[in-house]
Length: 208
Image 1 (cartoon, rainbow, N blue to C red):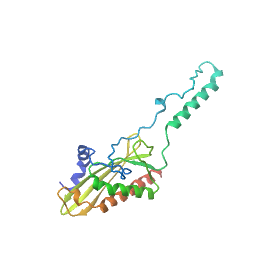
Image 2: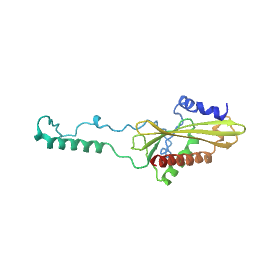
Image 3: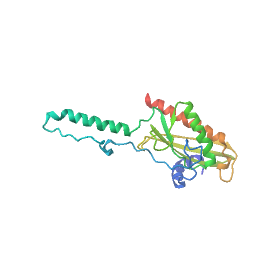
Image 4: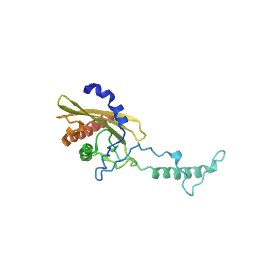
């Protein structure tokens, strides 16, 4: 199987692999493995009425208009307080699928550094408010004395809808029995730089 044929099965193979050896970009301090799910926005319909508020029926009674406006304003204030706003450029990077933890660590460290340098705020966990969620799928393929790291990032909105896809490859010299053994920290740091650059390029183009 060459590298071009491998692209068609990369995501399928990553899903079968499961979430072993995954790490969030902001979980590099204690090496905890965190499972991920897109953040679901708070819906006004799911929030209880604030304590002490009164439902006002105005049908056929013009005198109740002021009371209705007051109750509605109170409920809207409760919704706003329960839903913290995401920053202008905030990103949650979900635990990475397909690569072992020792290989992922330099990637996540560099993602954090590069994002901060570009003015992108990385949120700490899946429950933090974020404008986008990014999920990464990685695999390594040895061929002709080289190892190629193939990567795909899906950029999602907080509801889990895919907005954009980033993909690419990074080659390193040499091969090992498990392929990942040949992948250097420098190679993973290069992928981090490319990822943040492509994400920012997409963000800039989507605003134009």
